[in-house]
Length: 220
Ligand SMILES: NC(=O)c1ccc[n+]([C@@H]2O[C@H](COP(=O)([O-])OP(=O)(O)OC[C@H]3O[C@@H](n4cnc5c(N)ncnc54)[C@H](O)[C@@H]3O)[C@@H](O)[C@H]2O)c1
Image (cartoon, rainbow, N blue to C red; front, side, top):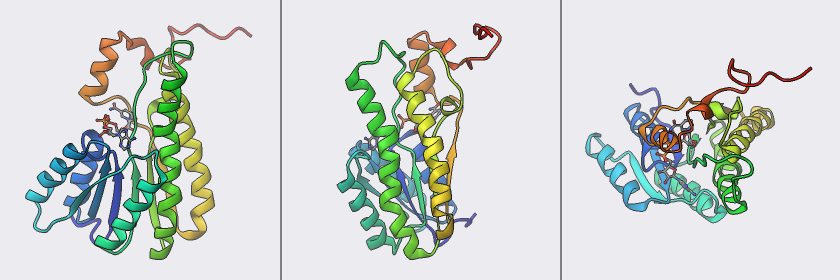
């Protein structure tokens, strides 16, 4: 308890799923939290639920579309106005697209790239100046196991989650002198929402790394 006392966190995609769980955990550890999402009603409900179980109001919901610079600017300003600054950014918002390279439309590609990749860059771009004012910070970019290994589907998802990994490494080097840590997290599939969509698409092979036993071996 209280490991995050005095800290202010901004979590994108905090209305439900993992983002909501992160907000609940951060609040329980003493942080003040702003959760942003495009699902406004769900975001408000999640904040109300967490606040109802806390001693003081610790979570504020707001509208945040991670693809829009103006929304990020407003979200960071809200952290500063309501809670005095920003110490932690969790770039959690993300969407999946379980399609291979040829099956993915240009519109789908752009949508996944805009949310999963551009959204992470924009979040860091606007959070870093606020963290500098605090003298330190921590940025946590939610990638995926799909950002580390290939599979038989999810082309755009792989591309963006892999990009988040190297973007995080580059940012970690760039902002080390500012005492701002940047890490990416690479989760396995764990929630019913994701597993259900994989089952519906009959894509169980898509979780198989390219060099697993069943994958064709590369010709030498
Ligand atoms: N669920 C898994 O098994 C799994 C595995 C690996 C990685 N991840 C990653 O974890 C993160 C959270 O996933 P989840 O399973 O909780 O999914 P989820 O769909 O439950 O939650 C994602 C949230 O992001 C929000 N979002 C979507 N587009 C947005 C936008 N433009 N602006 C702001 N918010 C937006 C959604 O409204 C939703 O609330 C994602 O980045 C995902 O890629 C999940």
